[in-house]
Image (cartoon, rainbow, N blue to C red; front, side, top):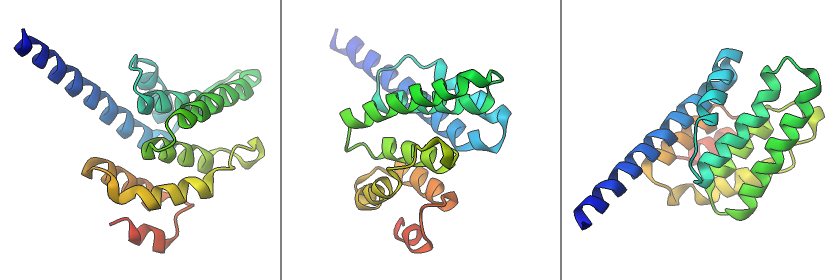
Length: 161
């Protein structure tokens, strides 16, 4: 019986991990084109996990849906719903660095007129202060994000080694 439970746990972890990698990879490419944005939204919508990081990506997908929707009246509601959800997830998981990366990237890329950019400095500082405590996969992901980020200075980027 313990063996069966162990197998179930391993398979669950493996598939959740691959779901997270799929979301990360798709999210990293989402801003390159509307097709990539739509692909990321589709991948995020298929996720049913209650993991806070996956929920964070789903919230980012809601925000990004404003970019690709053809219904102009819905853009504001997509951003508001996604931002509220992301803020709630971060409030409940304030020490999760990947959620901070998600919010930082959203706030960097959303038009300034929307007014959702108040956490840029805090998130950057949190990422820089907690980077060394992360696993190698997450460190690599953060390095790739920081390399293209407008918020990280060259000195900040150099410190993420």
